[in-house]
Amino acid sequence: MVALTQAQIAAAPMRIGAAAIAGWSTYLLGLARRGGTPFTVAADMTRFCLALTTSAPPAWAHPWPVVAQWPLAKLRDCGDPSATDRETVPTLLLPPQAGTHSCIVDHSPGRSQVEALRAGGLTRLHCLEWAPGSPETDGCSIDEHLAVVHDAVAHLGGRVNLIGDSQGGWLGTIYAALHPEAVHTLTVAGAPIDFHIEQPALATLAQTHTGAAASLVDLWYDAARAAGLQTTDPIGEIERAMTLLAKIHDPDEVTRIEAERRWFAWKQEIPAAFLDWIMRKLFVGNELVEGTLVVQDGPVDLGAIHCPLHLIAGSSDILAAPAQVLALAERVGTAPSSITTTVIDAGHIGLFIGRAALTEVWTPHARLLAAASR
Image 1 (cartoon, rainbow, N blue to C red):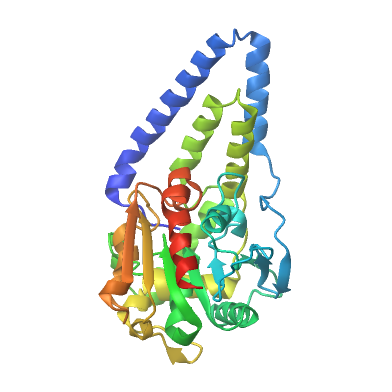
Image 2: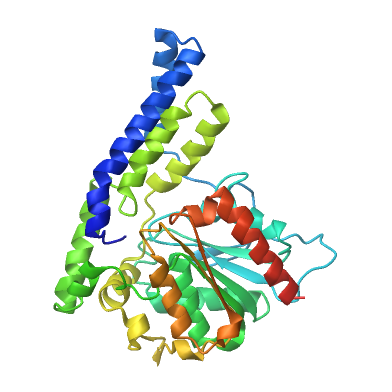
């Protein structure tokens, strides 16, 4: 969920118009090259509509085995047990859980963050898969989610390289602040740490009564999801549809885009108590950087983090602007020489499935982690 800036709202009609022009013009030119007939158009439109309306759930691109399980999550082993030179420190990947499926980190062949990390030499790689909220877990809030991370770290030997994507980034940051001895390195990608930087609407809400502000955010979130809207990137949904239209003649591209859309369209509920905590404590209260956040009966002191820190952001990310991510560097106890920052030309999801991000950022980053973990 995100509060759009005035500039982003103003740019929306232009983005929609440009996407429509590009999609239809590319489709019609391709149709002419194919010598298309009315039957070709009918077949294309049928395939297009089916791809846009499929209700099939998203799935992992590879069958990574489950090695541990809790009501809130599963732990998948994405490593290479046959490798001869394995790291002494394993890596734990925390995917986002903002109403979406964890398989975004292994979206499709050639668009997999897990594959990119393995290509960089991480042979002891594990990933959490968050479960949908249920009556059993509806009362689980931040403490229970942190307990799952702690159990996963213990399962892996008690010390890990922690990589957090989006929501997993601030969750990993909180965990590292509470258990600095358990985190060998911390990587935060596309995760807002300071939620109010470049988000004037959220900053304004913070000045109102906390309960009323959180209720307003909840109302918007619930109404948008009830209407079937993508609360994270509605304009992107239109752009993806037009990209699909332009590529409708290519079965491989259609399969890839369809898998991407299934992930975006999938609605995975968050435990109600956790969602309420996120809204009140982070989106509205911005307590992580205010220094007032208390979890597991103790304060979250970002200054307790002293491990090497790697911050990765997308220059066009509307969910986590670079300033929101890089704000962590100013609040940790890590020496400046042990902090790296990378800002790439990508949007939010592009950070994790974009080809450029995978080859130019994640695989080289994995090489660094692997070398430092042997």
